[in-house]
Image (cartoon, rainbow, N blue to C red; front, side, top):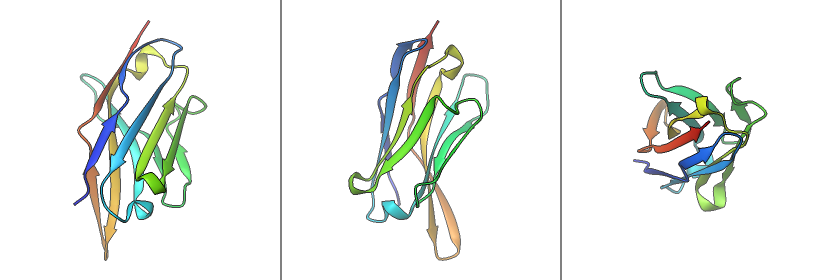
Length: 119
């Protein structure tokens, strides 16, 4: 079982910045594949960014060059630095961990943190 707790959301004006954090439980955090997803009202949850256990990032086209995903394995924490925020970035942001146990992958989710960008 992996527990994920997001923080750092809030209200910001367009063009502003926020940094989201996700604190993870467990002693094997460095081996987890991690990611950020978001869900806007009336829309499906979508991928924002992922990072492998080796630290390789991947971004949705809509956030490339504006968002940066990173991880601190010593602190069991995942980050998402969001710059040049736009109103369309408004959503609940969720932290995700993919954990492999033997041959099976398990998905874990945090409770989400609200990000609201005003125009």
